[in-house]
Length: 89
Image 1 (spheres, rainbow, N blue to C red):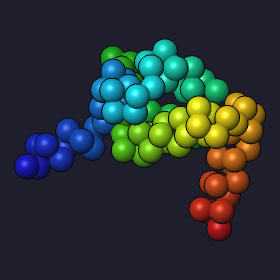
Image 2: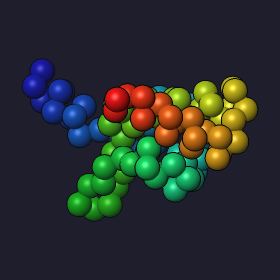
Image 3: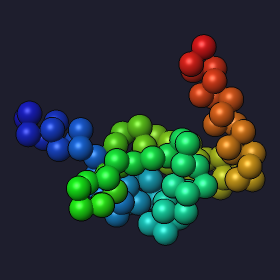
């Protein structure tokens, strides 16, 4: 069990994150650039992306904002900044 938890702590690959969220791999890479303040998966020593639970949640929120609620990229950035400010307060 601790081995499974340890694996989960290290995150999942970008292809697994894509399967979990329903967002294409190339879109995940693009969102990392556009939302670097909010979406920043860890990297292995070999440079592979590892999406943690909080990264998956951010991707799901971005998907909702951009695809369902039709926010622009700039609008989604402003929304995330407001959400993060209120969480910090």
